[in-house]
Each structure stands twice: as structure tokens, then as C-alpha cells.
Image 1 (cartoon, one colour):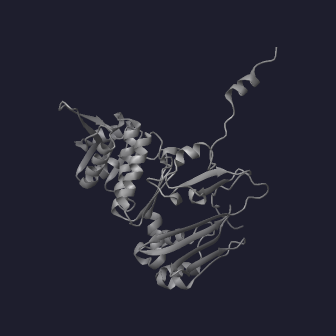
Image 2: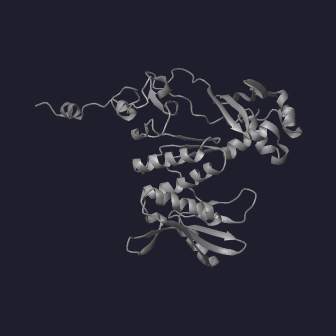
Image 3: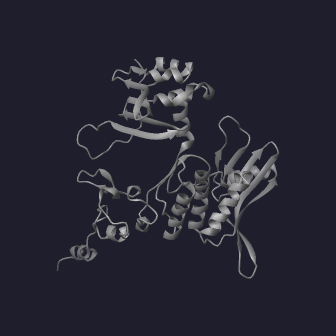
Amino acid sequence: MGRRAAGTARVPFRFRQGKARATEFDLQFIAGGRLLRFGLVVDDERVAEEWLVEVVGGRERVVYERVSSAEGKTEVQGKGLTDCGPKVELMAKLGGKQHHTFLASVKSLVEAEEILGPVALALEWFDSGLVLIGPEATFERLASMLFLDEKLKGFAGEFLKSASTGVDEIEVSRKEIAESDFEELWTRGGQKKSSPEADPDPIIITRNDGMELIKEKAGYFEQEVLARHRTDGGEEASFRLKDESDGTQKLLRLAPALYDLNQRPAVYLIDEIDRSLHPMMVRHFVSSFLSACQGGMRQLLVTTHESRLLDLEILRRDEIWFAEKDGGLATRLYSLADFHVRKDLKVDKQYLQGRFGAIPFLSDVQDLVEEAEPVA
């Protein structure tokens, strides 16, 4: 008996009666100065369809198309594969596992230097050109990033200062420790170990309190981020990052994203950017990005409940999108550009009044209380 495929582990829409439909993804992005479009259709058992095309002069040139049958047979075809290297062409003949994308199969089985053309560009974009930051996300190697990059450290300090956090500059405290202390601190600190995939040196362990423990050829070290404050009277004090407010901590953890967007083309998606942040700090972060990108191939996508970002002085109509559940409990997205609004309209005020939808309809709490009262 053949071994059953592991499945795709997708999460289908649960409010549809009968068998769940296949899920479809379709992304268009710029990588290496070329416009690519990647998509797939996936069900519980297999990646049923997959495609990668390059858009040239408004026309789509197929790099490859992949289809998996219900019987488990996978076929990958496309004239564009000839530009992607002989090993990639060989992988196309083999097909790959039905519950993996062709891109994933190529990445896991072909050496990076042997992957060329649009396939290489697509893999690079998914690896480093698309960055997802969740509400609880932290930069586990934040202290190491700041320690190794003086420009980033200076940028982060200036950004926190410009956001009126009270922080004047950022520094990294680093000291050498004994091997026995390293092992004890690791055991005691709720560790999470991370290191480069192909190089076990250094080993960096981020403790729950933000301290990093480092094992490298030069020895054993502990390091952490400190925020330096100065009063009007000239007094100075340094605080550990864990002692700063949640808002200051989140801004510092977002600073590398803003710095990165200043340096290279990338797409950052930040979920619930307003979590733990004052509305003015959220606006400051978005405005800082808009000032920095200035026509570069960079994009920032944020989800938020902060209505004060609905401001036509900082965002265009087509940059503001609403999310609303329909009668079938599916979420529908639509743009402010779908509405005819004046340039001087106070969008946030009109939104809260219900003009654009996508607002909760709340019951009267007093009615709920009265309904709950026992009848005499």
C-alpha cells in the first residue's frame, strides 16, 4: 500500500456548506526589476495548480505551469524553465511532491547557485522581499542586529527620539561571561535558540527578558539593548528595553523594518500596527515610511483599527482599504477609491458615522441588562 501524502495543512473557509472549495492565491510582485505573477490552487490533499509568469510589455510569458491530478501525478511544463538552470528543468521533469509547491521543491532539492532566472527571483522575493510582522512579533536577534550595524543603531535611536518616546539614543551592553554562566543563564531564561542555517557559529539565544546569550569562536557573551535618557538638567539614565513602555518597545522593534525599507526594495506587512502604540506614533511611523520611500520599489501594508489614519493628507484614496463581513461571513475588501469623496473630506469622521461601512453595529448594553433581569 502506498504511503499517504502528508496533506497541505491549509485552513479552508468554514462557513460554506458541503465540501470546502479549493483555496486560490494570486500574487503580483517586482523582483530584480522584473514583474512576476505567482499563483496556486490548493485543497486539503494537494497543490492542484501552480503557475509562475513574467509580465513583459503587458503580456504574460509563462515560466511554468504545474498541475497535480487526484491520482497524485504531478506535471510541470513551461518554456521559461530553460532560463532557470538545468537542475530546475530536471526538477520539472520529476514533478515534485503533490502537497508541495514546485518552488518549495526546487528550494529544498537544488543548490541556490544552480537556480537561475525568474524562479531564482521568485524564491529570493519570498525569502527576503516579503516580510510579515504579526501583532506579537519580536526581533529575536535585535541586540545583535544593533551591535553589528552602527547605522541601524543610530537610525533606531533617532527614530525613537523623533517619536517623543523620551529616548535619546540606543546602546548595546555586551560583556564576556564564563561558559558555566552561559549554561546557567540559558537554562534559567526561557530560551529560544536561533542560528544561521549553514553555520553553527555563532549560536544566539534570546531569553524571555530580551537578553541575548552568544556562543562564538571568541568566547561566551551576554548582550542586551539599553535606552539612554537625558533630562533637561543633564542627568542621564539607561533603561533595559524590558523596562521601557510597550509602545517604545514596539517602535524599536519596528525600526529595523523602517530602516530596511529605506535601504532596499521590499514589502512589509504589519498586522495590527496600532497594538500598544499611541495613535500619533502610528501616524509618525507611516509618515516616516512615506517620506523615506519617495518613488522607490517599496511597499508597506498595515492592518489597523486606528481610524485617524484615514487622512487624505497622508494617504491617497486608493491606499485606504476597508474590510467588512458579508452575509455569508466572508470578509470583503474594498477601496476608498470606490467612493466619490472630496480631497478635503474628513474621512475618519465620515467612516465612524458609517458612510463607508466596515464598522461594528453594537447592541444597546442597557437592553441586554434589562433582558437579563429576572421576572418577578
